[in-house]
Length: 248
Length: 82
Image 1 (cartoon, rainbow over the protein chains, first blue to last red):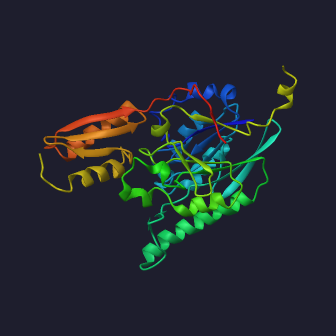
Image 2: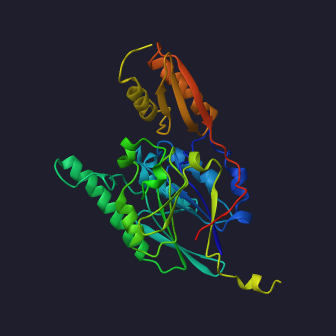
Image 3: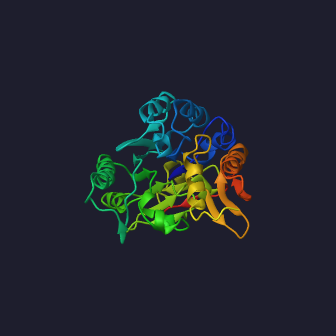
């Protein structure tokens, strides 16, 4: 059994430091790892990254994150990443990591993701250079998630993004902005691998639960959606751990 | 109150692009005599700043603020994924 705590869109600045910490201190009793689905900061500054590292760093469980669009606002995403990694936080962008938990290998592949839209209302790689750049970014980032998912061997595989891979978890948002909240190519990448769970944020007014076309469970863990410090998801529930088999 | 048909759009952009706000998760709805703000933010300071900045930019607009502060307590339940 593996328990994953997850939240997104925490938008930490100095006015938020201390709000999450009491719940985060309880994590070792509640989950084996914490995943944060982007928008760690308000404007993506180094100072805000330090606030996030102070609030979410130094925990007794591993912390794995992707950046969100807010974390790119100041064009300091590389420095933000450095601050987080110096605090012991793993930052994924088209990459993957494996955590050894309770004798199992938990693979986590992550990327910020990007917009682009979904079936029936998606952007095409056609026309003005700006549109081709937009959709080219969608395709490039989605391909990097696909490669990251395929780069690890794990007992359970989690896809971590900021942007949404399916429209179901956007329900509640205006239809007109779906194309700026996610893209179907992320869902295709997730379906191309034996993914156990896909986590994303970004859609503050969206819905919590969905599935990819291939049937992978998707959870929108944006803080305003889950309305608590983090959700906890249990994977590999069918696996009885050796320590438990001897009981009763 | 202004009759500007783009008012909601202009407020929405202010909420996102203003240095002291940077909020994309606030909805702006026009009522007969007021603008209603909905959504959740991470601190009371951020909620108050939103109202302050909108009032400064659009002094003729009456604002009703229904913005909440997102709770940050630990969860009490675990969801089993299958």
